[in-house]
Image (cartoon, rainbow, N blue to C red; front, side, top):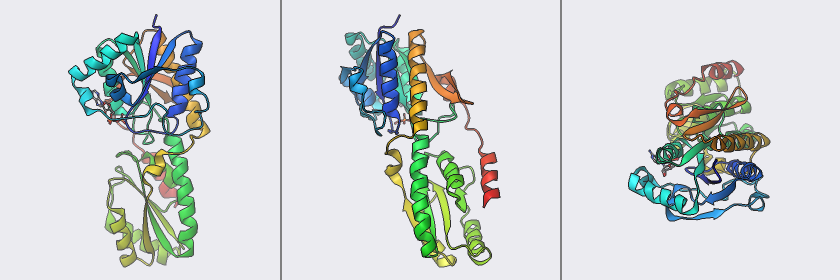
Length: 320
Ligand code: ADP
């Protein structure tokens, strides 16, 4: 049976990664395994920046955003010769298996390592909720909370000045943060890759909200990479009765103390990852479906199409 495992965080960081590191470490130690932290993702693996983790080392981190292990991107990890160096570093220390906390790209690295004899399990750590093998990713709920908090504040000041606030949120081409936030914030308009961005139509709707509905403010939530929100805000000022203001929330969405939901999700998923490795299983990623913790082969997971959010969008439309 596997005796020594490693854990790393890779790609973009997300609140709740620390809770996952803690869960993997504590569950593994309590199961009689030894645990090593691999620092700075695959980069640290190649460089041999690998240290033992104790129960105490992962104490006092469940409430902290970011990742105590650090994260990094190493595009060269796609080269087998680079991965061989990583495998050598693991062999030197007797580390037989790894839990990889990250997004799709990190899963690809995990599969490649599994193919080279190091069993890897992926945990979905990203605020974007863009991993299709799980209903929710670790960090999504916290990022949503941050967005809702910011938009609630923007609404206060927008109503005082008859403004239309255009808020750009993250999502990496996945509209979940935008549509969930739209519903939770009672926004007037949401634009995602699924709804598209029809500028003329949106301006028309804003004019209606101003003239017919006599709204004192309007909130438009837009997924990143859809349009230049600053330019669009200027068009709102020119073409509607609202004064348009753009806010790009940016990296604040990645920070903050994880919500209880993210902490519990990370803990449940961390436990599952260790259980799979103890059964000698690799090349799988953990997810949550209908509130059950599941695992899916990584190769299959990477090919699952994104579920349509039509129902949520319909609900959104009926709430305006
Ligand atoms: P995320 O995991 O958040 O999607 P990236 O796409 O940047 O973030 O991937 C994180 C890291 O995973 C990359 O920097 C690289 O080291 C590794 N990786 C990505 N794609 C592959 C691949 N096809 N093969 C091996 N490693 C990969």
